[in-house]
Structure formats: structure tokens, C-alpha cells
Image (cartoon, rainbow, N blue to C red; front, side, top):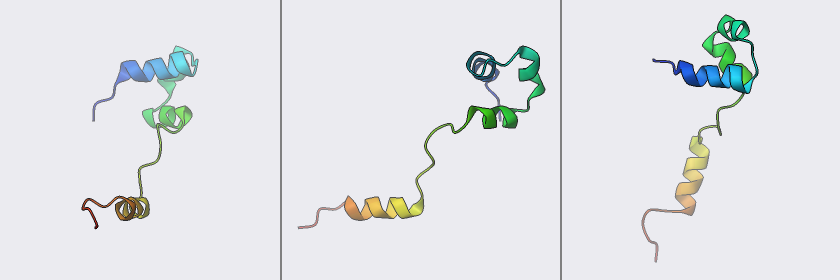
Length: 61
């Protein structure tokens, strides 16, 4: 897995206002934890099933 170091540096140094030595002392996992959730949680099976019931692929007439 390749890391996007430029984006990580923008997030850590630019977004979190970390000093370079603070940024480089972190692991990628620690930085990710500091940044918080990256987006909404993935849809679970229960919600998927609910949507399938509410919006079936086939027309019911």
C-alpha cells in the first residue's frame, strides 16, 4: 500500500498545525486517528436490505 505523503503532510502540518518534527514522529495510524473519521461509516447489511425492500429493482404492479 502506497502512502500519499504530500496529502498526509498537508493534513498534519497544514490542517492540524503540527510542527514538522511532531508530524514525522507520528505513525500513519496515529495521524489518521488525530484526523478523525474520514467520512461516513460504510453501509451495513441491515441498511442495504432496507433499501432493497424500499426500492426494488423490479416494478411491482
